Amino acid sequence: AAKRAGRGTCRFFEMDMSEEATRTLQIQQAMREALDKDYFSLHFQPKFYGHDGALAGAEALLRLNHPTLGLLSPAEFISIAERNGQIVPIGYWVVREACRQIRRWQAQGFQPTKVAINLSPRQLAQQDLLAKIVEILREEQVAGDQIMFEITETAAMHDVRRTADMVRAFQHSGFEVAIDDFGTGYSSLAYLQRFRVRQLKIDRFFVDGLDKQSDEGTAIVSAIIALAHSLGMDVVAEGVETQSQWDKLKALRCDEMQGFLLGRPLTPEAFGALLGARTGRAARRTSALAPIE
Ligand code: C2E
Ligand code: MG
Ligand code: MG
Ligand code: MG
Image (cartoon, rainbow, N blue to C red):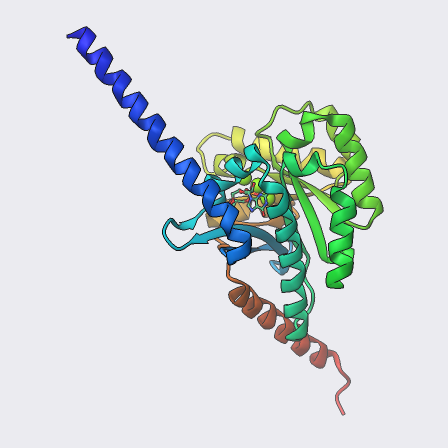
């Protein structure tokens, strides 16, 4: 019986493997067609200031909408694109499309907001990454301070010296940099001061911890925020889903927050509506300050 169970288990395993392999091949093929056939799109998730709740910017998040595979999340396709290098051309498409969207919002009369773009390890390994990004912004006529870049802690720690050089070069060219998913990698905190990034994004895992009964979750987030502030960095909390998380993060002086409680990733049109509402409010505030005749 044991032998039969063993064989059965083994067959299951092989079936899973081949299903996964087939899926991977389908996604690779989908990505090969995607740039030509316009299957990619960007969604924009709003970020808000902790102190007053005003809109602070957006994170651009890639989507792959395939006619037969459906809407794929980056969780499924980015790692495949990263492994076979497809992420490199896709990544340049993301930068260009983000620029074009910024210009579209500008043309609609909205006040500018900063858009954060994710960069993965394979992209960071490109020697001409920064030069190509600068070139795209020049072609699309977007200023460097309209865009910032996020690199995960794990990617940053892969080669600390190179990351430090890259961060310096990006900042020298006028781009702010954030460390993404902070706390999930294995960084020695001492390395943080070598990067000198603008923002630290605390991973969702720690934000979840704020809702637990024990005080430990709060202690950890409090320590990360204190450390970041002492190094002159702003802190962004990812994955804020509950009011009590917002309240605690605000009390801990977290600079910016992002999460489903505040706003899901939105289509460009829906994010534009958010920008429009803000523009309207700002306009009213300005007119309220105008002298009364
Ligand atoms: P990330 O950069 O950490 O982006 C945040 C992810 O958390 C997004 O998932 C977002 O939808 C999700 N999220 C935001 N708020 C909440 C929340 O309150 N609860 C929960 N459960 N999730 C929340 P998404 O869009 O599926 O992206 C996953 C990852 O894929 C990103 O993680 C990023 O590492 C990568 N990615 C996305 N777009 C790009 C891209 O254009 N280029 C590269 N290289 N990577 C990208
Ligand atoms: Mg990110
Ligand atoms: Mg993140
Ligand atoms: Mg994350």
